[in-house]
Length: 378
Ligand SMILES: *Cc1c(COP(=O)(O)O)cnc(C)c1O
Image 1: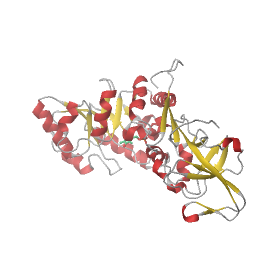
Image 2: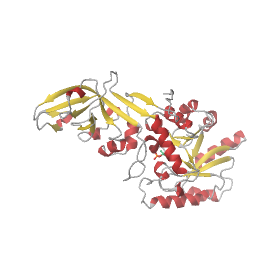
Image 3: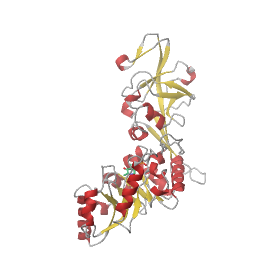
Image 4: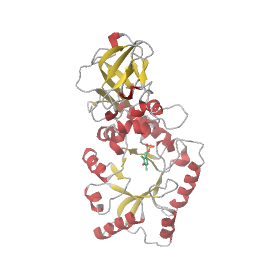
C-alpha cells in the first residue's frame, strides 16, 4: 500500500484517459450519430471543466447540463464551437441570458416555448433550441395534450430554429423492458411534427439498445464515467473514479467489544480495527454501515460498525501491520471494487455514489493524449 503524506482524508483520482476511452467506445457504437455528453452535476461529481475539456479534445461538441447556472459556469472553459445545452430550459424570465452566455435551452413545456418565441420576436431572429417530448417519463417535455394543441396551431414554434427533437428513456438499462420500444414508437410519432430537426433519444444505456435508438445525437453521462450501462451484463467501459481513504489509527479490541455509534458491530474474537478518514459527509453513504468493503494490499476487508460523519472503521485483523501505518491509503473505489459494486452494497445506483463524492477529497486528474504522451493539461 502506497504511503502518501497528505493533509486530506482521502485521495480521489480521476482518470481522464479512461473518460477519453469511454467516449471513443460510445462513439464507435453510434456510427454516424453525434455523441454528446451529459456533464450536469459537475460531470457526476468528477469535475465538469476537466471532463468537458478532454471530451472536446476527443471531438464532442454537445454538452448537456441541467441548470442555466451550470451552463454559465462552464461556458468560459470551452471553445465557441461547443454547444452547451440546458436540459431544464430557461427559468421564467431568464431567457435573454441564454443569448448572453451562448447556450441553448431544451424547451420542455408550452410556457417555455412561448417565452422563447417571444424573445425571438423581440430580437427579430430565429433562435435555436431543442424541444423535448414526454414519451413516458412524465417528468419533462411536452405532454400528449400539448402536442395535440401544437397540431392545431401552425404558428406554435414560429421563430424557433429547432435543432433536435428530444425525449428520455425510463428503462433503458433493462434491455428486455417493453417500455423501451413503446417510448421509441411514441418518439417516432411526435418527431413528425419536426421533419427538419434531428432526433435525440439515447442516454448511455440507450446507446446499447441498438441503432434504432441512436437517431442523430446521443446524450451519455454515466457510461463516460465508467458506470455499467446494461443491467446484468459485463461492463465494457473503463473505470474513471478511484478513491483511497487514509488510515488515521489502528487498535486491537477484545472479544465482546463493540465498534461505532449504536454499538452495532461486536467482535467475536480479538480484532484489529483501522479507522479511515472518510465518512458520510464525504458521500460515503451511511447505508454502507456493516456492509461495505475496502481493499488493502489487494485484499478485501469488511467495514464494521456504522459509517460516521468523518470516519469508517475496518476489520483489518488479516492484514500485515506494514500496510496499516497512519497515513497509509486503503482502496475504497477501485477497478475491482467498482462504483457499481459499491452502489449495490449501499442499495443505490452508481450515479448516486459518484454525485455524492466528497468536496473534502484531494482530487488528482491523470490524462494522456491519444498519442501516448502525457497531456500536461493535468
Ligand atoms: C442525465 C440525463 C442524461 C444522461 O443519462 P445517463 O444515464 O447518465 O447516460 C441524458 N438525458 C437526460 C434528459 C438526462 O437527464
